[in-house]
Image: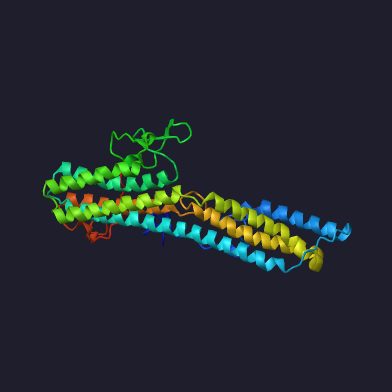
Length: 363
């Protein structure tokens, strides 16, 4: 019989990407979703205005003998232009979203490779000072991931460390406990001088690689490979900055909005003679579709924010932090036992089937 304590222990278990993966089934079909994750809230105003304008045109045409009808043949030519502009906008925005996710994966891959290499360099025969330096470097690698996430969101951190950050509004110190425990003691961030914290932290990693090479812990080829991983991390970081700082040209955005508005205003004139009052819901449906596509592109344009449709950076970063925390916890336990192959997992699930310790950076 399963007790409450057993259930709590079972809930404490985790799996890779437990935060980023979906945990429960959708309660409602996507076709019935209108709020959470939907674009409706952003387009309700233009759809409503076009519906009112269409109703006004139909009322004038039928009740005031306005004869406002236009040939329906003008719709296909205009719709081609609108369609091409929306395809370009959405394709460009999705490419930015997908490239951002791939670049985040590139940073994660570099951190995993560096973590694996660093933890296998430091053996049980190393000195306590060397082990402390190794642990600090691993923490810095995860701090780089947090700093990159916050940098892309213009959420500057690290001016006063630990536990303080710079407010982007008035440059006043504000609490920032999210990853202050991962940063080197006494670090002073230079965000207020224009240097991103993520780039600043890579110097600690580079210095660690150099020390290991100078002391003979690693040979020059292995040090070169670790430097390549660090360079790949910085390269992905810079490309994510490019996505964040290079919006869609404003001339294209202005023209697209104006073309959408003009197309929506022409539709009632082309439908009023044949459809009468039915032109109002049909115009509303067409405008809902077009402005919805435009709104989706607008959300995907900056994929590093907090919107439902943005990259789940918070969840992904937390998953990687837990993953590396387990590796670091296993390494520390292996060092204490004097084992070279600490990564075998014997410290977590031994012969007696002992439960996972839930390793963390605070252990």
